[in-house]
Length: 421
RNA sequence: GGAGGGGUGGCAGAGCGGUUUAAUGCGCUGGUUUUGAAAACCAGUGUCACCUCACGGUGACCGCAGGUUCGAAUCCUGUCCCCUCCGCCA
Image 1 (cartoon, protein in one colour):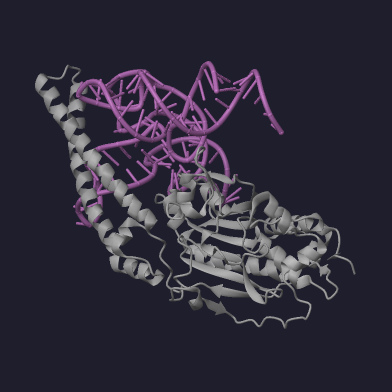
Image 2 (image 1 turned 180 degrees about the horizontal axis):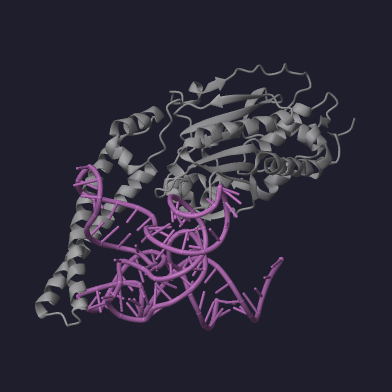
């Protein structure tokens, strides 16, 4: 959520930010009008209530029964207050609806542009030359008997995958290695949060109300399945004032559930785009002044993880039209997929400034005192799973069809190579 | 699913119709003392909104939503969540 005061005091900058994202600015004028009405109503209600408080306080202090006149007058005041409150509620609710529909504003250094063709590659990298045996991950997995797409379809239909034997173990090894590395080397607290969340939690991240169509839900229970652990981790401090010092660094390994309507017909083969996948996520609550540096640190962590897995990567700075609703700035890390001869998004790292904290009503106490403030939140994949798995297979593929594993995984998988030699 | 108990300020925890503008403790901030630190002592310190250049003022908030009343943290109804016990399922 944007700061209402900022919309009022710095209207043109807010409009410019929305335009940069290709967003409709019409709600701004409605918001400004509703805010004026809202203030009027608050003032009128407050003064009516002040009157009522004065009178009843006097009666109480004098320990007497109220007079007939007083009772009449107070009843009328009560009715007036009720009427004002009712209008105030409806104005506040309209205002909130509009506010929840506004995306975050892109930071100044976010590239202009409305679609992915305007994303900037940071430090161009040449992909390695193609090898004659390069082949997509589904063929590799099929040959080795470690990816079983047919069974997945039997169980759940399209856009699911199933891993078997050493494939399942490799998957588990990657996840375990990622978590351990984040905890042991990069100062993250490991968490294992709920995967089903309340509606308010999804409003807090920005997924609701706007993107309900992308999410799975249990309507009877009022619970939704998370599309990313960002949702659960952001929810930890919902409606509360963080007790203690920032920064807070959480990581989690969770399943993620997405309907993927928007991708209908695209990436249908293999496990690249599926309705259920797993991800190891990094999440931070930081002081506002520290968020840009924190984002750089998180990018460096993800790049380092890719390096240790032996991946060829490139870094993308997303343009204003391509960043997520809640994001103020996003970098994607893409890994070279030799089997498909394309760059594959393996991590997305964003700062959401105070946008999520505001929606979530998460606050902290700055060190010097002086009340509460909204922290900044940042999230990023410490590598998304099926794609990391894909990259390990395609990069490690040998001419004989076996896959040589990155050294960091040897102990966990129990071998250096999958397949015959 | 059944029975009971409970949700109060950063935390703990009183209050159960009108001097409560929510006691007290912890924590936090500042000060005194000290070579320095700790301890002790003194003072301050809930959140949010609106008005004001400011000093300051006003209002709301005791899980949430209604209701009763001149007046509700306090009484009534509904609802959500947490805890204990029982049952059922893993």
